[in-house]
Image (tube, rainbow, N blue to C red):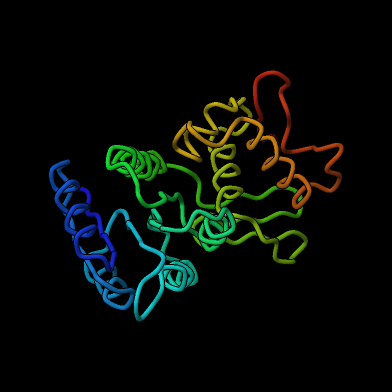
Length: 226
């Protein structure tokens, strides 16, 4: 049974989420603030964290940053009452995997929960490390270097690279990359995949305009060759 932790300071929302998640068959733990949430994470090791960003004692932003700094890679679904794109982007940049804006549809939230857990389940068997040219990537620690110097990759860039590495030499379609890295198809679009691959080339290839490892298969998708 998948364990889900909900960290939310509004009691009514917290109870509603707990009831719906338990109805779906999940084992649910709850916390009303960030410090209590951190304690629950260390105690129960959940498979998924549903995290409100505006929390007392320790904000969702701070909790997310702390977990990722400690190497905790548990999927995080953010809850936010804010509508500004910058707030969502900040949460994602800190290491969250997805977000839902309040007021939200319970049906949509449950779909995103299932998608994140599905992505975690299918991650089993993916490579923990990748080496090519002067690039070294450790997926377990979310670390990458090029010529011995640290390269900053986003979580989505790590995800794309890891999936390509798992299918080295084979073409991975844009739709498959979207499904397995982003986990839902309402957003983004296949153009987002292209933009992320372009960013990866700029960071990892010697010549991004003439890539030798991250190869485009026109009209289909991408492949990793070594």
